Amino acid sequence: MIVINARIDADPATIAALKDAIAAMETASRAEDGCDDYTFSVELNNPSVIRITERWRDIAALTGHFATPHMAVFQKAMQAHPPKGVTATCYEATEVPFPAR
Image 1 (cartoon, rainbow, N blue to C red):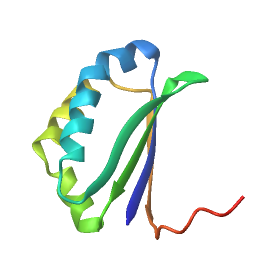
Image 2 (cartoon, rainbow, N blue to C red; image 1 turned 120 degrees about the horizontal axis):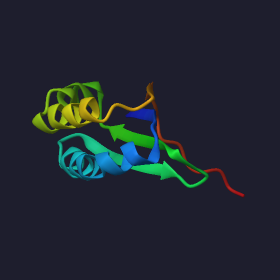
Image 3 (cartoon, rainbow, N blue to C red; image 1 turned 180 degrees about the vertical axis):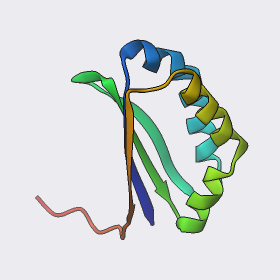
């Protein structure tokens, strides 16, 4: 499994301007073969930060995602409303049972 954790720093007006593009990106990405999760969220305690969590079956599925038309549309939206910064980290992971409490 491939896990992506990303952070977009942007002012709330930029986040509001990207809302439709984000919704379309989530919907289209979740429909892709190999996508197990694709979620944007705004931090409750910091409304200037968007978190993106992605889970992909494998690196081939993630690589294919980068070539999709909806990725190109989302990138254009980001160019039209540039954030202050974007960071992303990619992990290869194995799911493990949740520890007992």
